[in-house]
Structure formats: C-alpha cells, structure tokens
Length: 244
Image (cartoon, rainbow, N blue to C red; front, side, top):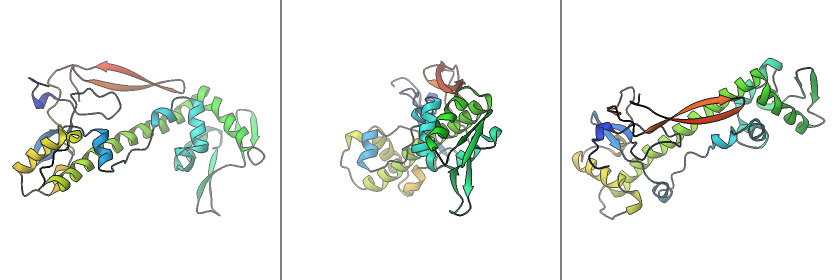
C-alpha cells in the first residue's frame, strides 16, 4: 500500500474479515513491527497447521451445532458439561472411565424425558429445538460458539508467529528466494539484518499488553461484530473510524 504509513495499518483480527492492509503487530527490541501475514501456501510449505477448527461451520445453526456435539470437534470437549444446565444437564462425567464426559442415560427438556440408552439419536435430535428456540439453550450455544471463534482466531495468530520463527531459522544464512513467502520473508530478512544477534524467537513475539499504533483515524479496514439471532451466529461488517 503505497503512501500508507506503517503505523496506520490495523491489527489483524483473524476473523475471516480482515482487510488486505492489516498486519500482525509484534515487538522486536521494544519497537513495534507491523508484520505481513504469511500466505497459506507458505505455511503449508513449512508444514505449519495449528488451526483445524471451523467454528463457522460448527455454529452455523442449532442442527450443525448438535451434529458436531455428536460426531465432531465438540464430541470430545468438556464444554458439553455446560449444556442443558437449566434442564438438569445433558452430559456428565463417567467416574468409571477417567471422568470422560458422556451423554446421560436420560435427559429432560421441558416436560419431555428422553431415554438415551435406548436411542442416543433421539436425545440429540431433542437438543436441536432446545438450542434453536429456548432462551437458555441459545445462551449456552452462543457461549460455546464464542469460545470456539476465539480459539480459532488465537490458532491463526499462533500460526503466523510460528511461521516467522521457522522462516528465520531456515533462511537466516540462506539467500534462496521463496516468492510464496513474500513480502513477509523480505520483511523478516530486513529485521534479521538489523538485529543479527537476536534469536529467532525474538521475531515471534506479539505486543503483549501494549497497544500498537494502528488506525490513524482511517476507515480502510473492517472489523467483525459477532451477534446472534436465535441460535444462528450472524456476522455484520462495520467500518470503524478508528480501531481499538
């Protein structure tokens, strides 16, 4: 972006809606660095795949949410213990099996009780309208989904910091061009030249509690506001005059 000062570039949100001008800000020798993002091809080249969580698909509806509880990522998550609490809980820990979280033998939703020993699928199907229409069910689903979105964003940011460390180790003393890793690799080489005695870990650091000098009153970047209508997470885009 010609003519755009680096201090005006916003921090990437890693929410799938970042503008092309966002950066993964970090600190090197106490100074802010607006790191470019490495491409998916560059990450794959270096076998970096930390984020495998697709929160958007899991939380697309009450049906996809329950399907994932039954067969997907959430099928092994302790987050299930917080589901159906207002109805007595849908899951419990099995003391005879290392406290593994399991579906209860029976669950009650409203005035109906379902025998899960006879038919687990009947119990899971009964959960769908609970998460779709019930006030408590929607709240529980939203809480779990928000944690999944946050985890996914953290994983994506960790991929980027891991990539910077790997690129540093692989190319510190090598001038072999790797086009799919630019402009990040060129930027990293400039930093390594400026700080030849820094360990590669130094280029992986984030900003911690410090606030990078981004925004500058521009509206070129968008941020995602996560809101829920019923059980469906809906993304709305809003351009902000300044990003926090």
